Length: 613
Image (cartoon, rainbow, N blue to C red):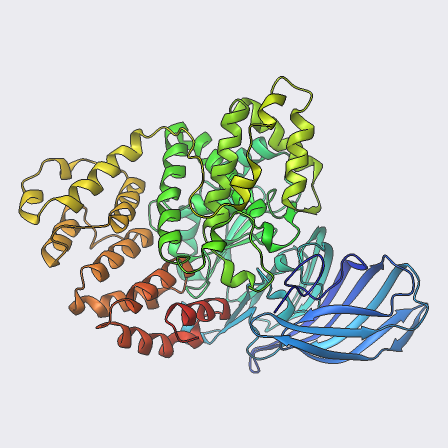
Protein backbone atom coordinates (compact mmCIF):
# COMPACT_ATOMS: atom_id res chain seq x y z
CA UNK A 1 0.00 0.00 0.00
CA UNK A 2 2.80 2.48 0.88
CA UNK A 3 2.19 5.74 2.71
CA UNK A 4 -0.93 7.47 1.39
CA UNK A 5 0.09 10.89 2.70
CA UNK A 6 3.06 12.81 4.08
CA UNK A 7 1.45 13.55 7.46
CA UNK A 8 -0.59 10.37 7.87
CA UNK A 9 0.19 7.03 6.19
CA UNK A 10 -3.50 6.03 6.32
CA UNK A 11 -4.99 9.19 4.78
CA UNK A 12 -4.90 10.72 1.29
CA UNK A 13 -5.73 14.18 2.67
CA UNK A 14 -3.02 16.82 2.72
CA UNK A 15 -3.27 18.70 6.03
CA UNK A 16 0.03 20.44 5.27
CA UNK A 17 -1.72 22.18 2.31
CA UNK A 18 -5.33 22.54 3.46
CA UNK A 19 -7.18 21.91 6.70
CA UNK A 20 -10.83 21.61 7.72
CA UNK A 21 -12.06 24.25 10.20
CA UNK A 22 -15.78 23.45 10.41
CA UNK A 23 -18.16 20.87 8.94
CA UNK A 24 -21.94 21.26 8.70
CA UNK A 25 -23.72 17.93 8.31
CA UNK A 26 -27.21 17.69 6.88
CA UNK A 27 -28.38 14.09 7.17
CA UNK A 28 -31.50 12.05 6.55
CA UNK A 29 -31.34 8.64 8.22
CA UNK A 30 -32.86 5.96 5.97
CA UNK A 31 -33.40 2.80 8.02
CA UNK A 32 -35.08 0.95 5.12
CA UNK A 33 -32.07 1.43 2.83
CA UNK A 34 -29.54 1.38 5.73
CA UNK A 35 -27.99 4.58 4.42
CA UNK A 36 -27.33 8.15 5.48
CA UNK A 37 -28.32 10.57 2.71
CA UNK A 38 -27.51 14.27 2.62
CA UNK A 39 -24.57 16.61 2.46
CA UNK A 40 -21.57 18.00 4.25
CA UNK A 41 -20.48 21.62 3.94
CA UNK A 42 -16.78 21.90 4.79
CA UNK A 43 -15.17 25.23 5.60
CA UNK A 44 -11.54 24.73 4.67
CA UNK A 45 -8.51 26.86 5.37
CA UNK A 46 -6.20 26.86 2.35
CA UNK A 47 -2.59 27.07 3.53
CA UNK A 48 -0.83 27.38 0.17
CA UNK A 49 -1.33 29.61 -2.89
CA UNK A 50 -2.65 28.19 -6.18
CA UNK A 51 -3.94 24.94 -4.70
CA UNK A 52 -5.38 23.07 -7.70
CA UNK A 53 -7.24 20.27 -5.91
CA UNK A 54 -8.51 19.06 -2.57
CA UNK A 55 -7.93 15.40 -1.66
CA UNK A 56 -10.38 13.81 0.78
CA UNK A 57 -10.80 10.30 2.14
CA UNK A 58 -13.88 8.24 1.27
CA UNK A 59 -14.83 4.59 1.60
CA UNK A 60 -17.68 3.21 -0.51
CA UNK A 61 -19.41 6.61 -0.57
CA UNK A 62 -21.60 7.67 -3.50
CA UNK A 63 -20.86 11.34 -4.20
CA UNK A 64 -23.46 13.03 -6.45
CA UNK A 65 -22.32 16.70 -6.48
CA UNK A 66 -19.50 18.92 -5.31
CA UNK A 67 -20.09 22.67 -5.16
CA UNK A 68 -17.84 25.61 -4.38
CA UNK A 69 -19.67 28.32 -2.41
CA UNK A 70 -18.24 31.80 -2.78
CA UNK A 71 -19.65 35.33 -2.57
CA UNK A 72 -23.24 34.11 -2.51
CA UNK A 73 -22.85 32.08 -5.73
CA UNK A 74 -22.51 28.33 -6.23
CA UNK A 75 -19.99 26.84 -8.66
CA UNK A 76 -20.17 23.10 -9.48
CA UNK A 77 -16.68 21.56 -9.45
CA UNK A 78 -15.30 18.39 -11.02
CA UNK A 79 -14.68 15.43 -8.76
CA UNK A 80 -13.63 11.81 -9.11
CA UNK A 81 -12.88 8.86 -6.84
CA UNK A 82 -9.76 6.74 -7.39
CA UNK A 83 -6.89 4.78 -5.80
CA UNK A 84 -8.89 2.22 -3.81
CA UNK A 85 -6.94 0.36 -1.12
CA UNK A 86 -8.53 -2.72 0.47
CA UNK A 87 -9.78 -2.14 4.03
CA UNK A 88 -8.52 1.47 3.90
CA UNK A 89 -10.65 3.40 1.41
CA UNK A 90 -10.36 5.63 -1.65
CA UNK A 91 -9.27 9.12 -2.67
CA UNK A 92 -11.86 11.77 -3.55
CA UNK A 93 -10.33 14.50 -5.73
CA UNK A 94 -12.11 17.88 -5.92
CA UNK A 95 -10.70 20.03 -8.71
CA UNK A 96 -10.40 23.72 -7.83
CA UNK A 97 -10.50 26.72 -10.20
CA UNK A 98 -7.06 28.03 -11.11
CA UNK A 99 -5.69 30.77 -8.90
CA UNK A 100 -7.35 29.57 -5.70
CA UNK A 101 -5.94 31.82 -2.98
CA UNK A 102 -4.94 31.13 0.60
CA UNK A 103 -7.67 31.56 3.17
CA UNK A 104 -11.21 30.34 3.70
CA UNK A 105 -12.94 28.06 1.18
CA UNK A 106 -16.44 26.53 1.41
CA UNK A 107 -17.28 23.30 -0.39
CA UNK A 108 -20.55 21.35 -0.20
CA UNK A 109 -20.56 17.67 -1.07
CA UNK A 110 -23.88 15.88 -1.69
CA UNK A 111 -23.61 12.16 -1.09
CA UNK A 112 -25.01 9.00 0.42
CA UNK A 113 -23.26 6.28 2.37
CA UNK A 114 -23.09 2.68 1.26
CA UNK A 115 -25.73 0.35 2.74
CA UNK A 116 -22.79 -1.55 4.27
CA UNK A 117 -20.63 1.42 5.36
CA UNK A 118 -17.80 0.11 7.56
CA UNK A 119 -18.37 2.83 10.17
CA UNK A 120 -22.11 2.24 10.60
CA UNK A 121 -24.10 -0.57 12.20
CA UNK A 122 -27.81 -1.01 11.46
CA UNK A 123 -29.86 -3.27 13.73
CA UNK A 124 -33.32 -4.52 12.90
CA UNK A 125 -35.87 -4.52 15.75
CA UNK A 126 -35.23 -8.20 16.65
CA UNK A 127 -31.57 -7.34 17.39
CA UNK A 128 -32.56 -4.77 20.04
CA UNK A 129 -33.73 -5.33 23.62
CA UNK A 130 -37.13 -3.71 23.02
CA UNK A 131 -37.73 -5.75 19.82
CA UNK A 132 -40.00 -3.00 18.37
CA UNK A 133 -37.74 -0.38 16.77
CA UNK A 134 -34.56 -0.36 14.67
CA UNK A 135 -31.28 1.07 15.95
CA UNK A 136 -28.21 2.49 14.25
CA UNK A 137 -24.83 3.64 15.54
CA UNK A 138 -21.40 4.60 14.27
CA UNK A 139 -17.85 3.64 15.19
CA UNK A 140 -15.39 5.84 13.30
CA UNK A 141 -12.10 5.12 15.04
CA UNK A 142 -9.61 4.51 13.61
CA UNK A 143 -10.28 5.35 9.95
CA UNK A 144 -14.00 4.70 9.36
CA UNK A 145 -15.27 8.32 9.38
CA UNK A 146 -14.46 8.23 5.64
CA UNK A 147 -17.29 5.71 5.18
CA UNK A 148 -19.74 8.17 6.80
CA UNK A 149 -18.47 11.58 5.57
CA UNK A 150 -16.14 12.55 2.70
CA UNK A 151 -13.50 14.20 4.89
CA UNK A 152 -9.88 14.64 5.91
CA UNK A 153 -9.98 11.40 7.88
CA UNK A 154 -6.81 11.93 9.86
CA UNK A 155 -6.33 12.90 13.51
CA UNK A 156 -3.86 15.54 12.27
CA UNK A 157 -6.92 17.68 11.42
CA UNK A 158 -9.39 18.99 14.01
CA UNK A 159 -12.61 20.82 13.24
CA UNK A 160 -15.84 21.92 14.91
CA UNK A 161 -19.13 20.63 13.57
CA UNK A 162 -22.88 21.10 13.60
CA UNK A 163 -25.47 18.67 12.34
CA UNK A 164 -29.13 18.59 11.33
CA UNK A 165 -30.39 15.01 11.52
CA UNK A 166 -33.77 13.83 10.23
CA UNK A 167 -34.83 10.53 11.78
CA UNK A 168 -38.00 8.57 12.68
CA UNK A 169 -39.91 10.74 15.15
CA UNK A 170 -40.41 7.94 17.70
CA UNK A 171 -36.63 7.49 18.04
CA UNK A 172 -34.01 9.56 19.87
CA UNK A 173 -30.90 10.80 18.03
CA UNK A 174 -27.64 11.43 19.92
CA UNK A 175 -24.25 12.61 18.66
CA UNK A 176 -20.76 13.42 19.96
CA UNK A 177 -22.01 16.97 20.45
CA UNK A 178 -24.49 19.00 22.47
CA UNK A 179 -28.15 18.99 21.44
CA UNK A 180 -28.92 22.46 20.12
CA UNK A 181 -32.61 22.00 19.27
CA UNK A 182 -35.12 19.17 19.17
CA UNK A 183 -38.35 18.80 17.25
CA UNK A 184 -40.25 15.63 16.27
CA UNK A 185 -38.19 13.73 13.72
CA UNK A 186 -35.39 16.29 13.62
CA UNK A 187 -32.50 17.02 16.00
CA UNK A 188 -29.86 19.75 15.70
CA UNK A 189 -26.40 19.33 17.24
CA UNK A 190 -23.40 21.56 17.87
CA UNK A 191 -19.80 20.61 18.75
CA UNK A 192 -17.83 23.80 19.45
CA UNK A 193 -14.57 22.14 20.51
CA UNK A 194 -12.42 21.06 17.52
CA UNK A 195 -12.20 17.27 17.13
CA UNK A 196 -10.63 14.79 14.69
CA UNK A 197 -12.98 13.02 12.26
CA UNK A 198 -12.80 9.72 14.19
CA UNK A 199 -14.70 11.40 17.08
CA UNK A 200 -17.77 12.23 14.98
CA UNK A 201 -20.40 9.81 16.26
CA UNK A 202 -24.13 9.17 16.00
CA UNK A 203 -26.61 6.75 17.55
CA UNK A 204 -30.36 6.53 16.94
CA UNK A 205 -32.74 4.21 18.74
CA UNK A 206 -35.56 3.92 21.25
CA UNK A 207 -33.46 5.44 24.01
CA UNK A 208 -34.20 6.85 27.46
CA UNK A 209 -31.93 8.48 30.04
CA UNK A 210 -31.31 8.64 33.77
CA UNK A 211 -29.23 11.33 35.55
CA UNK A 212 -25.77 10.43 36.91
CA UNK A 213 -24.75 13.92 38.06
CA UNK A 214 -25.32 17.59 37.34
CA UNK A 215 -23.84 17.44 33.81
CA UNK A 216 -24.00 13.71 33.27
CA UNK A 217 -26.66 11.17 32.23
CA UNK A 218 -26.73 7.57 31.06
CA UNK A 219 -28.71 6.60 27.95
CA UNK A 220 -29.87 3.08 27.09
CA UNK A 221 -32.89 1.07 26.05
CA UNK A 222 -35.68 1.14 28.66
CA UNK A 223 -35.16 -2.48 29.76
CA UNK A 224 -31.66 -1.86 31.13
CA UNK A 225 -31.44 1.87 31.83
CA UNK A 226 -31.98 1.58 35.61
CA UNK A 227 -29.35 -1.17 35.90
CA UNK A 228 -26.99 1.07 33.88
CA UNK A 229 -27.62 4.05 36.18
CA UNK A 230 -26.75 1.86 39.18
CA UNK A 231 -23.67 0.30 37.54
CA UNK A 232 -22.23 3.68 36.53
CA UNK A 233 -23.30 5.65 39.62
CA UNK A 234 -19.65 6.62 40.35
CA UNK A 235 -19.31 8.50 37.04
CA UNK A 236 -19.59 11.99 38.61
CA UNK A 237 -16.87 11.14 41.17
CA UNK A 238 -14.61 9.83 38.41
CA UNK A 239 -15.16 13.02 36.39
CA UNK A 240 -14.36 15.21 39.40
CA UNK A 241 -11.19 13.16 40.12
CA UNK A 242 -10.09 13.41 36.48
CA UNK A 243 -10.57 17.19 36.54
CA UNK A 244 -8.37 17.46 39.65
CA UNK A 245 -5.67 15.48 37.83
CA UNK A 246 -5.90 16.95 34.32
CA UNK A 247 -7.42 20.43 34.50
CA UNK A 248 -10.75 21.95 33.38
CA UNK A 249 -13.28 19.76 31.54
CA UNK A 250 -14.01 21.64 28.29
CA UNK A 251 -16.81 19.49 26.80
CA UNK A 252 -19.64 20.72 29.12
CA UNK A 253 -21.67 17.49 29.13
CA UNK A 254 -20.46 13.95 29.95
CA UNK A 255 -23.08 11.35 29.00
CA UNK A 256 -22.80 7.60 28.63
CA UNK A 257 -24.66 5.55 26.03
CA UNK A 258 -24.84 1.83 26.76
CA UNK A 259 -24.67 0.21 23.34
CA UNK A 260 -26.15 -2.96 21.85
CA UNK A 261 -23.95 -6.10 22.27
CA UNK A 262 -22.53 -5.79 18.72
CA UNK A 263 -20.52 -2.71 19.71
CA UNK A 264 -16.90 -3.85 19.07
CA UNK A 265 -15.02 -2.01 21.84
CA UNK A 266 -15.18 -1.70 25.62
CA UNK A 267 -15.81 1.99 25.23
CA UNK A 268 -15.40 4.79 22.72
CA UNK A 269 -14.54 8.24 23.97
CA UNK A 270 -16.91 10.20 21.71
CA UNK A 271 -16.97 13.75 23.14
CA UNK A 272 -20.02 14.59 25.29
CA UNK A 273 -21.28 11.02 24.74
CA UNK A 274 -19.07 8.04 25.60
CA UNK A 275 -20.25 4.78 24.02
CA UNK A 276 -19.82 1.72 26.31
CA UNK A 277 -20.35 -1.99 25.84
CA UNK A 278 -23.18 -3.71 27.78
CA UNK A 279 -20.57 -6.32 28.84
CA UNK A 280 -19.63 -3.86 31.63
CA UNK A 281 -22.96 -4.60 33.38
CA UNK A 282 -21.59 -7.01 35.98
CA UNK A 283 -24.08 -6.02 38.69
CA UNK A 284 -21.38 -4.94 41.15
CA UNK A 285 -19.64 -1.97 39.43
CA UNK A 286 -16.49 -4.11 39.15
CA UNK A 287 -15.98 -3.31 35.45
CA UNK A 288 -16.84 0.41 35.62
CA UNK A 289 -13.10 1.25 35.38
CA UNK A 290 -13.71 1.41 31.61
CA UNK A 291 -15.71 4.60 32.30
CA UNK A 292 -12.67 6.06 34.12
CA UNK A 293 -10.67 5.24 30.98
CA UNK A 294 -13.15 6.99 28.67
CA UNK A 295 -13.39 10.00 31.00
CA UNK A 296 -9.59 10.31 30.95
CA UNK A 297 -9.76 10.48 27.13
CA UNK A 298 -11.52 13.86 27.51
CA UNK A 299 -7.97 15.17 27.93
CA UNK A 300 -5.63 12.46 26.62
CA UNK A 301 -6.80 11.75 23.07
CA UNK A 302 -9.68 14.16 22.61
CA UNK A 303 -7.95 17.37 23.72
CA UNK A 304 -4.34 16.32 22.99
CA UNK A 305 -4.46 13.93 20.04
CA UNK A 306 -2.01 11.66 18.22
CA UNK A 307 -1.21 13.17 14.81
CA UNK A 308 -1.54 9.74 13.19
CA UNK A 309 -2.06 6.21 14.49
CA UNK A 310 1.66 5.36 14.44
CA UNK A 311 1.73 7.43 17.66
CA UNK A 312 -1.45 5.85 19.08
CA UNK A 313 0.30 5.34 22.44
CA UNK A 314 0.02 9.12 22.99
CA UNK A 315 -3.76 8.59 23.10
CA UNK A 316 -4.00 5.24 24.82
CA UNK A 317 -0.86 4.95 26.98
CA UNK A 318 -1.62 8.33 28.56
CA UNK A 319 -5.27 7.38 29.01
CA UNK A 320 -4.49 4.10 30.83
CA UNK A 321 -1.98 6.05 32.97
CA UNK A 322 -4.61 8.65 33.93
CA UNK A 323 -7.30 5.96 34.35
CA UNK A 324 -5.08 4.09 36.83
CA UNK A 325 -4.56 7.35 38.75
CA UNK A 326 -8.36 7.90 38.93
CA UNK A 327 -8.71 4.33 40.27
CA UNK A 328 -5.80 4.94 42.67
CA UNK A 329 -7.38 8.10 44.09
CA UNK A 330 -10.73 6.35 44.54
CA UNK A 331 -9.52 2.92 45.70
CA UNK A 332 -5.96 3.38 46.97
CA UNK A 333 -2.36 3.02 45.75
CA UNK A 334 -2.33 -0.77 46.14
CA UNK A 335 -5.25 -1.08 43.70
CA UNK A 336 -3.50 1.29 41.27
CA UNK A 337 -0.38 -0.89 41.20
CA UNK A 338 -2.39 -4.10 41.05
CA UNK A 339 -4.28 -2.73 38.03
CA UNK A 340 -1.02 -1.90 36.21
CA UNK A 341 0.45 -5.34 37.03
CA UNK A 342 -2.75 -7.06 35.82
CA UNK A 343 -2.44 -5.10 32.58
CA UNK A 344 1.04 -6.60 32.09
CA UNK A 345 -0.49 -10.11 32.24
CA UNK A 346 -2.85 -9.09 29.42
CA UNK A 347 0.03 -7.57 27.43
CA UNK A 348 2.08 -10.75 27.73
CA UNK A 349 -0.86 -12.75 26.37
CA UNK A 350 -1.37 -10.30 23.49
CA UNK A 351 2.31 -10.48 22.46
CA UNK A 352 2.33 -14.30 22.74
CA UNK A 353 -0.82 -14.84 20.64
CA UNK A 354 -2.19 -11.94 18.58
CA UNK A 355 1.18 -10.43 17.65
CA UNK A 356 3.38 -13.54 17.53
CA UNK A 357 3.74 -13.30 13.73
CA UNK A 358 4.07 -9.49 13.65
CA UNK A 359 6.62 -8.63 16.38
CA UNK A 360 7.20 -5.22 14.77
CA UNK A 361 3.72 -4.23 16.01
CA UNK A 362 4.92 -4.69 19.61
CA UNK A 363 6.96 -1.47 19.31
CA UNK A 364 5.55 1.58 21.05
CA UNK A 365 5.79 3.66 17.86
CA UNK A 366 4.83 1.54 14.85
CA UNK A 367 5.26 1.88 11.09
CA UNK A 368 1.88 1.89 9.33
CA UNK A 369 3.28 2.31 5.79
CA UNK A 370 1.92 -1.10 4.80
CA UNK A 371 -0.55 -1.86 7.56
CA UNK A 372 -3.93 -0.35 8.40
CA UNK A 373 -4.58 0.92 11.95
CA UNK A 374 -7.26 -1.77 12.48
CA UNK A 375 -4.72 -4.52 11.77
CA UNK A 376 -2.17 -2.89 14.09
CA UNK A 377 -4.69 -2.47 16.93
CA UNK A 378 -3.57 -4.25 20.11
CA UNK A 379 -3.03 -3.68 23.83
CA UNK A 380 0.61 -2.60 23.23
CA UNK A 381 0.03 1.19 22.98
CA UNK A 382 -2.25 0.98 26.05
CA UNK A 383 -0.10 -1.09 28.39
CA UNK A 384 3.46 -0.64 27.15
CA UNK A 385 2.65 3.09 26.84
CA UNK A 386 1.27 3.46 30.38
CA UNK A 387 4.17 1.40 31.78
CA UNK A 388 6.61 3.82 30.10
CA UNK A 389 4.85 6.78 31.72
CA UNK A 390 4.93 5.10 35.14
CA UNK A 391 8.67 4.44 34.62
CA UNK A 392 9.16 8.15 33.82
CA UNK A 393 7.06 9.20 36.82
CA UNK A 394 9.18 7.08 39.16
CA UNK A 395 12.41 8.29 37.51
CA UNK A 396 11.53 11.98 37.94
CA UNK A 397 10.44 11.65 41.56
CA UNK A 398 6.91 10.27 41.77
CA UNK A 399 3.36 11.66 41.40
CA UNK A 400 4.01 14.95 43.25
CA UNK A 401 6.62 15.84 40.60
CA UNK A 402 5.06 14.16 37.56
CA UNK A 403 1.40 15.13 37.90
CA UNK A 404 2.15 18.90 37.62
CA UNK A 405 4.16 18.05 34.47
CA UNK A 406 1.18 16.05 33.13
CA UNK A 407 -1.12 19.07 33.60
CA UNK A 408 1.46 21.34 31.94
CA UNK A 409 1.77 18.94 28.97
CA UNK A 410 -2.02 18.78 28.55
CA UNK A 411 -2.29 22.57 28.68
CA UNK A 412 0.62 23.05 26.26
CA UNK A 413 -0.84 20.79 23.55
CA UNK A 414 -4.59 21.27 24.17
CA UNK A 415 -6.57 21.38 20.88
CA UNK A 416 -3.47 20.19 18.97
CA UNK A 417 -2.40 16.95 17.26
CA UNK A 418 1.11 15.80 18.13
CA UNK A 419 3.79 13.15 17.59
CA UNK A 420 6.04 11.42 20.12
CA UNK A 421 8.83 13.96 19.56
CA UNK A 422 6.46 16.69 20.83
CA UNK A 423 6.00 14.77 24.08
CA UNK A 424 9.79 14.37 24.34
CA UNK A 425 10.33 18.11 23.92
CA UNK A 426 7.59 18.91 26.49
CA UNK A 427 9.32 16.66 29.04
CA UNK A 428 12.70 18.22 28.24
CA UNK A 429 11.41 21.81 28.41
CA UNK A 430 9.67 21.19 31.72
CA UNK A 431 12.57 19.55 33.56
CA UNK A 432 15.69 21.09 31.94
CA UNK A 433 15.93 23.98 34.43
CA UNK A 434 15.06 21.92 37.52
CA UNK A 435 17.03 19.72 39.89
CA UNK A 436 15.73 16.73 37.87
CA UNK A 437 17.53 17.71 34.65
CA UNK A 438 20.11 14.90 35.00
CA UNK A 439 17.24 12.37 34.76
CA UNK A 440 16.54 13.49 31.16
CA UNK A 441 19.73 11.81 29.93
CA UNK A 442 18.83 8.61 31.81
CA UNK A 443 15.87 7.91 29.50
CA UNK A 444 16.76 5.49 26.67
CA UNK A 445 14.14 6.71 24.19
CA UNK A 446 15.16 4.30 21.41
CA UNK A 447 14.86 1.35 23.76
CA UNK A 448 11.36 2.33 24.89
CA UNK A 449 9.99 3.51 21.53
CA UNK A 450 11.62 1.12 19.06
CA UNK A 451 12.30 -2.17 20.83
CA UNK A 452 9.97 -5.14 20.38
CA UNK A 453 8.28 -7.18 23.08
CA UNK A 454 7.48 -6.46 26.71
CA UNK A 455 8.46 -3.10 28.32
CA UNK A 456 12.27 -2.96 28.75
CA UNK A 457 11.90 -1.93 32.40
CA UNK A 458 9.11 -3.03 34.73
CA UNK A 459 8.61 -0.29 37.36
CA UNK A 460 8.78 -1.09 41.05
CA UNK A 461 5.10 -1.81 41.73
CA UNK A 462 3.50 -2.76 45.04
CA UNK A 463 3.00 -6.48 44.40
CA UNK A 464 1.06 -7.46 47.53
CA UNK A 465 -2.30 -7.99 45.74
CA UNK A 466 -0.65 -9.50 42.64
CA UNK A 467 1.39 -12.01 44.68
CA UNK A 468 -1.84 -13.64 45.86
CA UNK A 469 -2.96 -14.23 42.26
CA UNK A 470 0.52 -15.36 41.26
CA UNK A 471 0.56 -17.99 44.01
CA UNK A 472 -2.94 -19.17 43.15
CA UNK A 473 -2.06 -19.53 39.46
CA UNK A 474 1.08 -21.48 40.43
CA UNK A 475 -0.96 -23.74 42.71
CA UNK A 476 -3.68 -24.47 40.13
CA UNK A 477 -1.19 -25.06 37.33
CA UNK A 478 1.16 -27.36 39.30
CA UNK A 479 -1.17 -29.46 41.49
CA UNK A 480 -3.47 -32.32 40.56
CA UNK A 481 -7.24 -32.15 41.10
CA UNK A 482 -6.94 -34.46 44.13
CA UNK A 483 -4.22 -32.30 45.72
CA UNK A 484 -6.19 -29.10 45.10
CA UNK A 485 -9.41 -30.55 46.53
CA UNK A 486 -7.61 -31.05 49.87
CA UNK A 487 -5.86 -27.66 49.81
CA UNK A 488 -6.91 -24.89 52.18
CA UNK A 489 -4.97 -22.33 50.08
CA UNK A 490 -7.48 -22.38 47.21
CA UNK A 491 -10.15 -21.21 49.66
CA UNK A 492 -8.31 -17.87 50.12
CA UNK A 493 -10.80 -14.98 49.82
CA UNK A 494 -9.96 -12.83 46.81
CA UNK A 495 -11.54 -9.76 45.19
CA UNK A 496 -13.27 -9.89 41.79
CA UNK A 497 -10.28 -8.12 40.22
CA UNK A 498 -7.92 -10.68 41.74
CA UNK A 499 -10.11 -13.48 40.39
CA UNK A 500 -9.92 -11.99 36.88
CA UNK A 501 -6.13 -11.60 37.13
CA UNK A 502 -5.66 -15.12 38.56
CA UNK A 503 -7.63 -16.66 35.66
CA UNK A 504 -5.56 -14.58 33.22
CA UNK A 505 -2.32 -15.79 34.81
CA UNK A 506 -3.57 -19.38 34.67
CA UNK A 507 -4.19 -19.00 30.91
CA UNK A 508 -0.60 -17.73 30.62
CA UNK A 509 0.85 -20.76 32.52
CA UNK A 510 2.96 -22.80 30.08
CA UNK A 511 1.90 -26.12 31.61
CA UNK A 512 -1.21 -26.91 33.61
CA UNK A 513 -1.22 -30.31 35.34
CA UNK A 514 -4.46 -32.29 34.87
CA UNK A 515 -6.23 -29.62 32.83
CA UNK A 516 -9.36 -31.70 32.35
CA UNK A 517 -13.05 -31.68 33.11
CA UNK A 518 -12.42 -32.38 36.80
CA UNK A 519 -10.11 -29.41 37.19
CA UNK A 520 -12.48 -27.06 35.35
CA UNK A 521 -15.37 -28.28 37.55
CA UNK A 522 -13.31 -27.69 40.71
CA UNK A 523 -12.35 -24.21 39.46
CA UNK A 524 -16.01 -23.39 38.79
CA UNK A 525 -17.25 -24.64 42.16
CA UNK A 526 -14.42 -23.03 44.19
CA UNK A 527 -14.99 -19.55 42.75
CA UNK A 528 -18.71 -19.75 41.86
CA UNK A 529 -17.83 -19.18 38.21
CA UNK A 530 -20.97 -20.76 36.76
CA UNK A 531 -23.21 -18.13 38.31
CA UNK A 532 -20.91 -15.19 37.44
CA UNK A 533 -22.42 -12.36 35.35
CA UNK A 534 -18.96 -10.82 34.97
CA UNK A 535 -17.98 -10.92 31.28
CA UNK A 536 -14.24 -10.75 32.07
CA UNK A 537 -14.57 -13.84 34.28
CA UNK A 538 -16.70 -15.75 31.75
CA UNK A 539 -14.28 -14.87 28.94
CA UNK A 540 -11.29 -16.29 30.81
CA UNK A 541 -13.19 -19.38 31.93
CA UNK A 542 -14.18 -20.11 28.31
CA UNK A 543 -10.55 -19.84 27.23
CA UNK A 544 -9.56 -22.39 29.90
CA UNK A 545 -12.37 -24.71 28.74
CA UNK A 546 -10.94 -24.46 25.20
CA UNK A 547 -7.46 -25.20 26.51
CA UNK A 548 -8.84 -28.24 28.36
CA UNK A 549 -10.34 -29.39 25.01
CA UNK A 550 -13.80 -30.02 26.49
CA UNK A 551 -15.60 -30.49 23.18
CA UNK A 552 -18.97 -31.15 24.82
CA UNK A 553 -18.92 -27.55 26.10
CA UNK A 554 -18.32 -26.07 22.64
CA UNK A 555 -21.93 -24.82 22.36
CA UNK A 556 -21.47 -22.88 25.60
CA UNK A 557 -18.25 -21.30 24.27
CA UNK A 558 -19.93 -20.28 21.01
CA UNK A 559 -22.92 -18.96 22.95
CA UNK A 560 -20.57 -16.62 24.83
CA UNK A 561 -18.87 -15.61 21.54
CA UNK A 562 -22.32 -14.79 20.10
CA UNK A 563 -23.56 -12.94 23.19
CA UNK A 564 -21.43 -9.90 22.35
CA UNK A 565 -19.10 -8.86 19.54
CA UNK A 566 -16.62 -6.97 21.70
CA UNK A 567 -13.27 -7.65 20.00
CA UNK A 568 -11.43 -8.01 23.30
CA UNK A 569 -13.47 -11.19 23.90
CA UNK A 570 -14.35 -12.44 20.39
CA UNK A 571 -10.91 -12.37 18.84
CA UNK A 572 -9.04 -14.47 21.43
CA UNK A 573 -11.93 -16.98 21.60
CA UNK A 574 -11.90 -17.44 17.82
CA UNK A 575 -8.09 -17.54 17.74
CA UNK A 576 -8.08 -20.26 20.41
CA UNK A 577 -10.76 -22.23 18.55
CA UNK A 578 -8.76 -21.92 15.32
CA UNK A 579 -5.90 -23.72 17.08
CA UNK A 580 -8.16 -26.63 18.12
CA UNK A 581 -8.61 -28.85 15.01
CA UNK A 582 -11.70 -30.63 16.40
CA UNK A 583 -13.52 -27.33 17.08
CA UNK A 584 -12.28 -25.14 14.21
CA UNK A 585 -14.92 -26.19 11.60
CA UNK A 586 -17.77 -25.40 14.05
CA UNK A 587 -16.11 -22.07 14.92
CA UNK A 588 -15.91 -21.11 11.24
CA UNK A 589 -19.53 -22.15 10.63
CA UNK A 590 -20.64 -20.11 13.62
CA UNK A 591 -18.66 -17.06 12.49
CA UNK A 592 -20.08 -17.22 8.95
CA UNK A 593 -23.61 -17.32 10.43
CA UNK A 594 -23.16 -14.26 12.65
CA UNK A 595 -20.56 -12.10 10.86
CA UNK A 596 -23.21 -9.88 9.23
CA UNK A 597 -24.31 -8.85 12.74
CA UNK A 598 -20.75 -7.64 13.51
CA UNK A 599 -19.25 -4.26 12.67
CA UNK A 600 -16.74 -4.37 9.80
CA UNK A 601 -13.75 -3.76 12.09
CA UNK A 602 -14.69 -6.88 14.08
CA UNK A 603 -15.54 -9.28 11.24
CA UNK A 604 -12.49 -8.17 9.23
CA UNK A 605 -10.02 -8.96 12.03
CA UNK A 606 -11.69 -12.27 13.01
CA UNK A 607 -11.58 -13.41 9.36
CA UNK A 608 -7.82 -12.92 9.57
CA UNK A 609 -7.63 -14.67 12.98
CA UNK A 610 -9.45 -17.70 11.51
CA UNK A 611 -7.21 -17.74 8.43
CA UNK A 612 -10.13 -16.94 6.11
CA UNK A 613 -8.54 -13.75 4.75
